[in-house]
Image 1 (cartoon, rainbow, N blue to C red):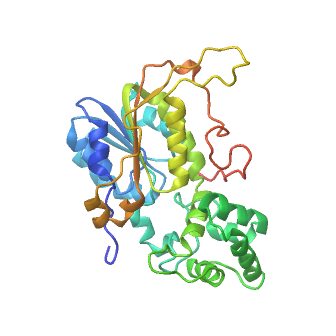
Image 2: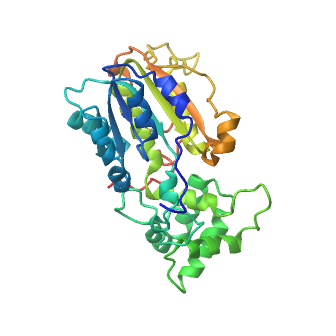
Length: 342
């Protein structure tokens, strides 16, 4: 598409090296996008792979790979929370994963399409729905009350001016509908100080917050981590690339909790048997892109890769995640994300 940015998979070599694809292995690309990880994994070994994406446009783009990797590549529309059923439906005799890759960033193809409404850089309908179904960003902006709008901007965008932005939105929508990305960006610019050299655009955090809320991204990430923990075989590799602090915090705390025995809560309480660790960290710190990649690909500047290996710990004693100990918004003492996965 003319004028659009070619999507480059961030930390591609590092992800594939961490996964170490092997012949006859079974792998998951949980965020297909434009297929960078999928192609690299399938080219590295004679393995099988299921790619998932909730965006029907991404599924359409991936159709050409079905013939290229005849019988080894499978493509399914759905969310992280669907992965177990999708793997069982598409992979014959599925009995576990040898590796899974997550790229949590928004595909640049989506950002470059004004009609999808993800970006403030070109005017388009205020949409932001990855699955093209359910409640749109315009619906939220027009109908959410002021206090809840402020909480969205604060919790999912870490926007310090959240209350001022919410108040301005409510003032404008009382007089005219807010239906485009340009309208919303203009409201934010009226509230925020002008951008100075080296600063992010004042609209960035608010647009990020709405996108995360609309698409239930943090709840889906939580569900995906919990699901893949149960799907990976002993020795299977989990590789997650995140792009902002909310995502990385969830991944980091999940892996920290799952890679060590639970701490004794108090010296005054009796010791109890702790669940065996379900993951082994392969790098205690996040892996960052090399300088060359950061210079060539702007998406790489904030990227962090975390990698862990599944242990042979039995699943029966791994508790479910309610989010209270992992610090993600929406569980249980924060505003619940909308269940909008289409």
